[in-house]
Image 1 (cartoon, rainbow, N blue to C red):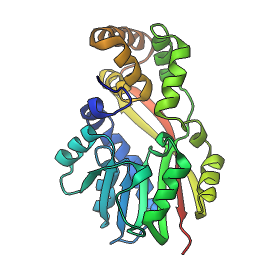
Image 2: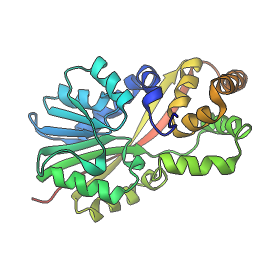
Image 3: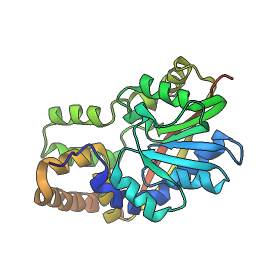
Length: 264
């Protein structure tokens, strides 16, 4: 039986639709991390290796981890020079102080136990080492609201909230810079800094709709409806978006990037 919570079945779509756009966030994250050129870096939740590749291009020795074997399979094909390992953030297979920096793009909201994950991240980070994580900062825009209304026409709202909370339990918490900073301070980090970055990504309509299946609700609803039901919903979505919005779509997003240092 498939597990809608995994990214295994959407890895190819993630790479095709989102990887090149998320590379822009990755560059800002690496710039803010400000680690040394030859730093040993761990990329937590590496996905298809976008952030790991950017860090590697800066001269770092990077290892990426992810629990999705499907995402790692794409990472190995698309970015073969970056080593990746199947692992979870709450049980990192590395010794204490192994890394000079730990980074993660859009992953912290997915940790089931944030405190436990940050504890293990701290364990593998050397004293004086740096961390850098990103999270979504924006609320629901017109495109997302239209998609939600379409979703709720086929799946009751009361079924969607628990599903989303299971896949990304801390999404709302880490939309706040203050909450982000407090979580890192509580984990023992110092020199905590957050910034909000704004991005504009242009998507052809069909590509944007393809990309919706990546997110938690898309994966959940696709699993519920089956392929024929999902195809029908997508056709309705295409007709609705065509009526309401010009093609291509200009998607404006805000992202928090947080950095901090482990005390020596």
